[in-house]
Image 1 (tube, one colour):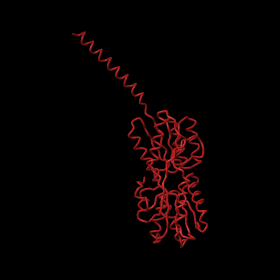
Image 2 (cartoon, rainbow, N blue to C red):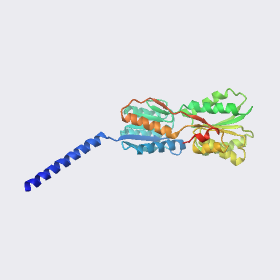
Image 3 (cartoon, helix red, strand yellow):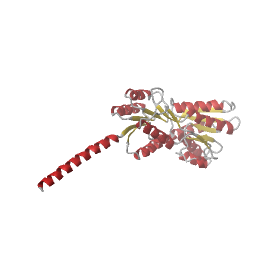
Image 4 (tube, rainbow, N blue to C red):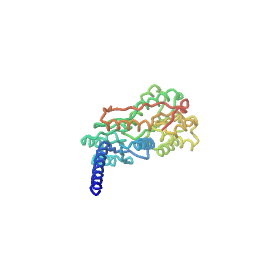
Length: 312
């Protein structure tokens, strides 16, 4: 009887050891893929939505682990955060660059460590990276074509640009100017950067309202600045008859179009951007070939189709 009990004990111990061994092998087979996500600023609505959507996708995949950081529009902080992820030996880094040229040292640092790096929403000035975003020139083209068609003769307009030096800011502006060459009668009264921020758009517009008695249109390179300008004009009782354009199709901009306060915007889907980034991460995780440029389509939004656009 004692021998039988001893044999049972030994058998159970062997089974337990084998179970632990097999469990370890399974864990090794399901190695967690580590992602370092360096956002440019959580206070920029489009980028915050993109980050949150990526987080949702990652939380539904137990094989993906994401660590987020917020550079708060500080390029040196963003470079430090990339360095930190390189030191932690993550499997891939995602960054939404603050500065076209300023981000290059961070990308090159990731390159040296053989860590793939995704440039999300904004191109970079150098290094080896995977770009995920839209063709920004098309944003400005859509704004320009709309204004060229709808502005009255001898119109006076104002332009609010995004962060200087950024590829999206430069390309949207250049495209708009290129298209407006077809309307030599249109005068750009003033141009100023609102740094992508609604509060800046409002403050700049308040100054412009004091300086210019006649304004036919305000073209903003993103929706928050356009909404800030609208707020200023509403406060001054001067919004009526002014065509306002933006980019991004954020929910509040879509509402402004429905209410007749905003003429047009360009639909860029933050969830689609996040999904494209997540798909690239999964391909890298699985060792699949990844395209160097993944482009997200955009679309003109006016009162005619605003109800069909879900927004970000």
